Length: 408
Image (cartoon, rainbow, N blue to C red; front, side):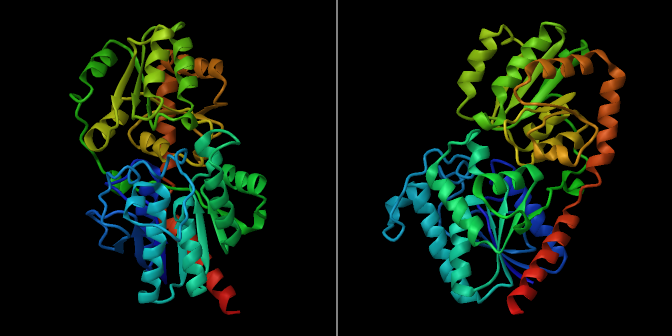
């Protein structure tokens, strides 16, 4: 199998789960014998990717304003005449995408027809469609999130909505990361349900490894834990999609009933100042800790210091951070609007807007050591059953089915 993989980021130059999913899925596919050409919009070193060939569509570095953040911020995307793009247009997302499309055009003319084209999210759909036009190879569109998820509403950017609609219509098959995402694709874009495969993400336990936790990273929180405080955390982007204002409201309600509780918010985004002000207005600013954007050691230690991880998203197609948190021995509270809840049972769930129920769940865990312990232990057995190897197997079956259909 020769796979043309079209993505927007890979670790360590990623700002979210999209790059992580692409990395592990590609690695698992390579272990199944697939030859992968992976196209990125930037140029950088990616250690541990010897199993595939990485192509850089531009010479820009990954900290370009549309490198790290472009995969998750579509509000500022403006229309552009994609037939008339020069260097100055690389300062726009649409200009970056045009260069990406042009690079993919040259690549397929050089490397020949792949067995399948696999495009991830709206950022690469246009390149995937163009590659399909040039090669007649089958196109898989892998939906990790829709514009409805990113905007947290039915609004969003109309340009992105149009790209998603065109890509979903032209795709030979669609992979959705959850049934929640499949439902959005069916009901919001009018795509037939039988065109969509649900393939849940997984976690690579071997890659996560036996990390030696450094209690000095968040030593103040460790001191509070020693005094009996419950450490609640969210490791996420501070955007409307993530429902963090509701999380802070629910946390404040819980604190009014149980005073030994702290909230660690690890990440950054446009809602940072709003959340800081909200914590102050609710009288819990001394119990809410902001780390800023974290990766590496600080990222791992944020999970390790936590007792409870909350995924408060308004709309979360999957939610890899929940599996990462479970690996680091936390109890999980997840909004019912999060896809990862489809593969986990030993969790508390609530509607993202139901701050009273969230407060009840936080207080319940804080006041019952036995409940906290059982949630942590039971979830370990569940997440360990999820494997990228299974994801790769499903993709290979899908590729082969499309290949047979194309030659029939």
